[in-house]
Image (cartoon, rainbow, N blue to C red; front, side, top):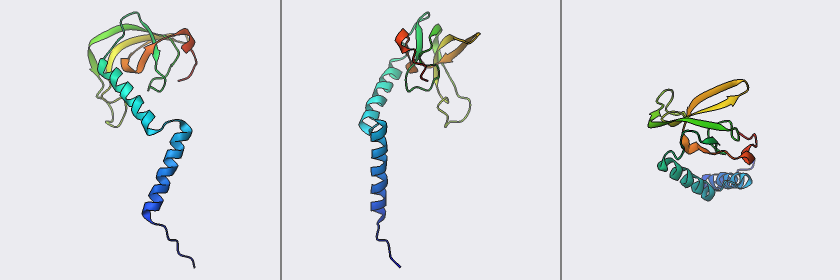
Length: 131
């Protein structure tokens, strides 16, 4: 019978190497993630940059569906609504809903509240259909 001579440190190092290889394949190294996080933080802290009548769309990588679909801002909350319903582990919990938008969904006109930091101005070339 052969005995394996592998330390816990070797196993953990191998797992870390596997994670780095996975991140490299997806183009998401920790340094790139930190740059993205800083950019998101800056947008969030700056607050709402949109006004009633602006045509916007969800940003790539954000939590909202409908990227590339035009939405119109119909209301800007003077005091943002805080969503405190549901599980504290949900990304919706504590969300700062600061603009109300409307979009066309098939035959329906659908209004809803969104967090402005997850949105960007809509551009015709942004109509990629990617959510």
